[in-house]
Image 1 (cartoon, rainbow, N blue to C red):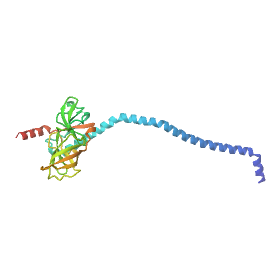
Image 2 (cartoon, one colour; image 1 turned 30 degrees about the horizontal axis):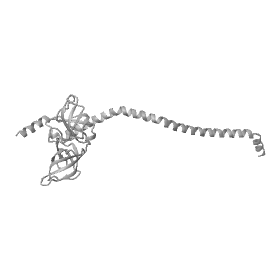
Image 3 (cartoon, rainbow, N blue to C red; image 1 turned 60 degrees about the vertical axis):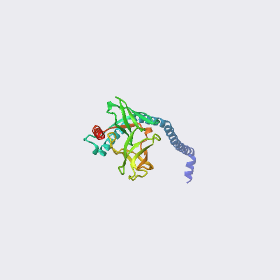
Image 4 (cartoon, rainbow, N blue to C red; image 1 turned 45 degrees about the vertical axis):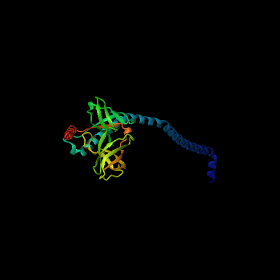
Length: 268
């Protein structure tokens, strides 16, 4: 024991040096980890805005491609859906043609509103074709040039659309009264129809313009005029016409035959 104490006393300076050296390495190691952590945090705070900017730029340039893909997918799905729903109305085996177009101008503040689209005869768009979205009806082609067309908006008091209650198939005439761009009126629905708030209204399909079964809106209010045998129903539209951008022109392959039949019948 005495020898051990004598050895420590003789080498005390060396042992103190070793102890202090080890302590310094420990402190340096901890300091480096702290500094490294601070550096990583600082680096992230500086570089993250640049990574976010790069991501946003990439998304901006990819957006058009993604939008076009969605438009084409909707075009296919809408065509398949309305063809399936209207097989009995088609006089031949050709499906409904759905042409994607974009709105260039959309008036909503007048009593007789019109929409301009960026497609005309060059893309197969012609007069009296229906214009729709995935949520409902937009209007009817009024006239077509080579590259643009004018559409009678459903927010036009002169336009009437054949429509029906989805659950009962009772028909009526859908029109805009010039008040709210979100509401339309369905007139001439017989009182025998069991109408309830929230009932879905769809296109009737009894014309050469719109295929049947396209959703329009829901019954929002029920009015029964005095001394009348018909309802007047207020319809809340599914589609917000004030915000439309991409729409679809619908070509009925049997339109000419149906128009001819209707004309012949009316003349009799």
